[in-house]
Image 1 (tube, rainbow, N blue to C red):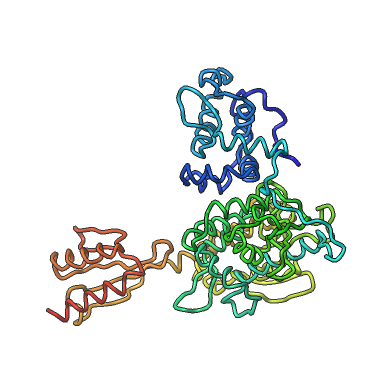
Image 2 (image 1 turned 180 degrees about the vertical axis):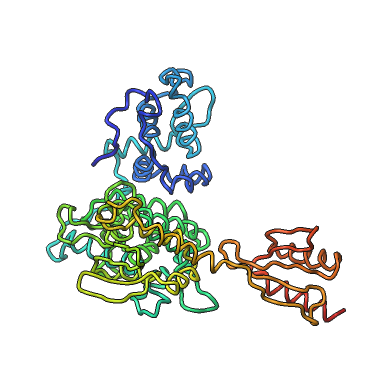
Length: 515
């Protein structure tokens, strides 16, 4: 088992250039927001400590390994003596991360690891103890058919692509396979999809940006929302986190027992409830819901490492073809891109995958479909349809750039400038102020309002009040609702959100009727 990427833990980095630039894992800010008691409970599990160690940057891991085998605290001055002046900032930043996670005790005199984490991490590395923190592997049984890695990969890919395909196809006059209600609720809570006036769920601007991320980032984005929902579902957050960390350290293709004979090794009630959710996401395979055995898929075993979370053609031991999700929806698609865009707005997509085609259909008018080629056009209507669903011009351009065909990458600039400019002009054309109400005898307090369509500043401009007193009266009511985005007493006008317009209009009409 590979624990670390750094080859040595004996010297501190000499300067910033010696440390690779790494983006902090998305889970770390969430962990830092938890209480010390919650983290200490989490650190009681060796698998959790090992997983968190994997998520940290190389310098943080190096500091932990330098302190792990010390039996007593080390003076701060001693540790600081290992750092040359050019590396002090890096050292301070890494130490701040560890203190924020309560991995290192906050002291200005001595440095020491959290005793609970130290004991558990030592156990994880040396393999001591009898804890079921890493799961309880199922013994081989001739009566129970083993599940191969190929089957697990195919299952994970099918479940994950079902979620993504529903995101891009729902509300587009298509009938994609519908995920479970739990998945749909998670997509709504994450802001990836929304229902407008009770209509079918449709992808949002945030959802389209989600498609530009790598599958690993996509998965953690959903899991973070799942963690935020744990409390309202009366789930123990520590149990939820420890179960995810346990899955990330398990062996792909090796089944585990959900309800072993020893009660101490059994999953908690919270973790048993998670089995159904994680099956829907493709992280766990079970023959049936009541089965006492479960197997983690590659989506689960790669949660805390850099290996691809979905099967690819280069993955040993699998015959599954290259994952369309990995190629089509990753912002790092690079030379694997499949889109050619011409100056006449015609789009050629060399793909036979329904998911890739569905993504393009969000902003492209489809013309022809062949076995390995889709031809379409970027039109005013297709782009405006995407804009009305919350997708921005920059997101459309970013997607075309991220998935440009290798032949396109020889161009400079990569995309035709005229096409980029026209997409932005179509967006500007839509984002104009439109008069929504003119002078009305029913509303003598307010002569006119204007609606502005540009997300995230969509709303109404209220102006031309009959008197200063009327302006202040309506403004005070709008502030009580918390919907005022901007105000100008000198011009007797203010800007409110779309959500607050119905209440404000009703308030004005009631006051007008009373007067």
